[in-house]
Amino acid sequence: MSVLLVEDDPSIAIVITAALEDEGLKVTHCETLAQRDALLIDSDFSALVTDVMLPDGDGIESLSAIRQSHPTMPVVILSAQNTLDTAVRASDTGAFEYFPKPFDIDELVRTVRQAVGTRENIATGSDDAALGDGMPLVGRSQAMQAVFRMITRVLRNDLTVLILGESGTGKELVAEAIHELGDRRTGPFVAVNTAAIPAELIESELFGHEKGAFTGAVARHIGKFEQAAGGTLFLDEIGDMPMQAQTRLLRALQSGTIRRVGGRDEVRLDVRIIAATNKDLKPQIAAGLFREDLFYRLNVVPIQMPPLRDRPEDIEALARHFLKQAAGEGLPLRTLDAQAADLLTRQSWPGNVRELKNFVYRLALLARDNHIDALTVADLLEAEPARGFAAQEQPIDLDRAVQQWLETTNPAPGTIHAQAVAALERPLFAAVMSQTGGNQLRASSLLGINRNTLRKRLSELEIDPDAFAKRQ
Image 1 (cartoon, rainbow, N blue to C red):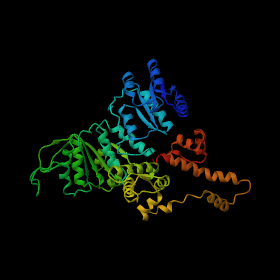
Image 2: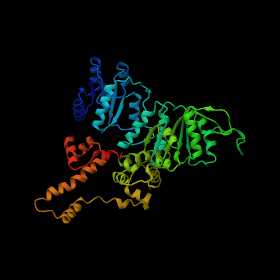
Image 3: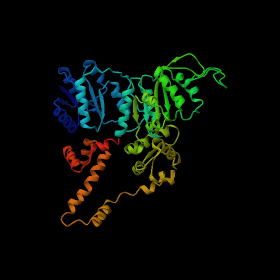
Image 4: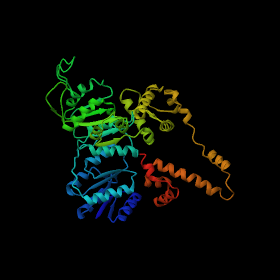
């Protein structure tokens, strides 16, 4: 079983090659599209692992031709351009899997072995036009990469999706992305906040009613299910839906039909269902507030939206994105200086992306000069003086911390260096593992040590990398 690896970064190529060869796979490595195409003419490979940005072109753009000449060869795509655009383009080529860099080498090896073993004929669903910068979601963090990958997996099917996450994390944006990038994009996208509809009206709003069904029903009303025919129905705050409406919704999902309130005829549905909630539905079920059978009907493909505090590396990109968005809506065009961007990144943002967006818009409006300029820490303080930005500006004084450790620990002569290194090493390794989400390849790169050395020290320090991965 042989694998063709197309990767122009020598260090990454060495790591991947060694890991795959350890699994008994033969690896042929090249660095350009031209070399790839020449090798594919004369050789038959069990799988192709390819980077996107290569010296002579885009590794995704030419994959449609590869799919035609080698229809049973699975393709695994690697990319440092970790955007939703790249994830969708990878999905549209019929790629077996997509890995944003940095990736977990063990997970990559497992995926390549699976690809080699199955050698499935993966159907392509490519749209000729590459998706542009109008992506509704922004983020290069590992947490958002997981979201992007889940989105790409549901674009070419009608499986029901349940989006979970705190208020303000962008659940409706995910629903819109699935609709706009999927096969139902030409149909309507109908969003319903089930928590905002009075309990006595929710069935009429969702399923419609016939004339005379109840007092005030002076004409037939077409409900949201029928309004969304051929498209997507987004049921937001599903955890707040009244129990009676939950029963009707369950029946509609089971039968694929609805009946208007006061009506007799069954109306067949042609709609994709995406639901979302900021509540943990398991306790709701235990308390008798949410139907367990409805939960399993909705939770076919769960997508967990990370809170902004778990993806601080995305904050600066989000802020700059919102500044451009604000300028497009008539506010002055702004940028951020480095200190202001750093201060934004160190905020907690309990309201998540929605809170950050609202603050950035306010910042763009209130900054004093109307010309193109870089916003500063002073502008942040002026936009929201009560936030306490200034209190978070002081950096940690490591020198003072070491001095305090020395004074309070009072180590024996001749042991100070060893004890100091030991005292610092465990929290340092734990912090790096937390920052990388348990990704040992990325952690070893950040620390500047060999991955085997990292594994050995983690074991000796009794640090479990899986514990950090679960936080992602």
